[in-house]
Image (cartoon, rainbow, N blue to C red; front, side, top):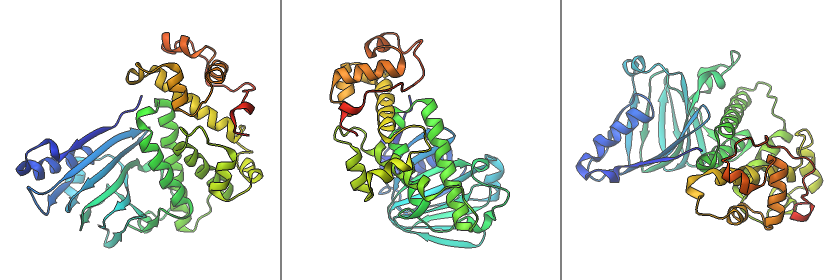
Length: 335
């Protein structure tokens, strides 16, 4: 199971906060030199985890500045790109002579293997990602032209990518290593397409695929809602049910199949989680949108080859891979 760790300046005395924050950024976000604009009144909080090869953190902090100089780069040769989604406040980014101001609803990306500075001119909240360079950049990209630019988190592929990042971060505690790896790969794929789109190069991500990814992100956010339905999704995206089904036509699974797959995966994770040991199987099923214990037991056995109670007792040993042989979903209100 994945995990999120929370670290805050509230853990230390006020006069130690600035030094504590400096050390935190140094160890968690790469070799950085930082300075706060206030010492005892400064507050900062970091919640961080990993999604496959992607390191993620949600950062809330007062005014501060960070610098990565050539000598610091020589101490830390990890080839990451750093992506920042601005949620609150404003931030100046500077690299290679380019300076960009980021506002809420925008994101930017820069290269940690080149010197840069980041100045948070007001209290900020950001989603920060460290992404392996080789998973995003291609030889045909003019990399320098794509770094330290403003990208929209509200339109186009950038919106799809940022929606997925937010959902992936929230779901880290319930993710398995396999699902986390798949989501991490999806994030890097969408990020690469975002950069290709900005550079004016052809991208293999069609409008249909972008809509499908937005639908999947919406399903992730509403997975616990027992009333989640095709009608609800169609209304949210202002399109017909026929068009919704067409977006999934190349997946080998319907939207309903996808919803049940996700719900069963979440239930499976909770059945194995020590944190959910006190919950009954019915409670777990209902918490992930099932409204019938009989329906849950039947579909779980079809998917994993054993009833949920036995799966919990054996900790999933000898379970079948997740499959969907003629799942009975018509009675679940999704059609």
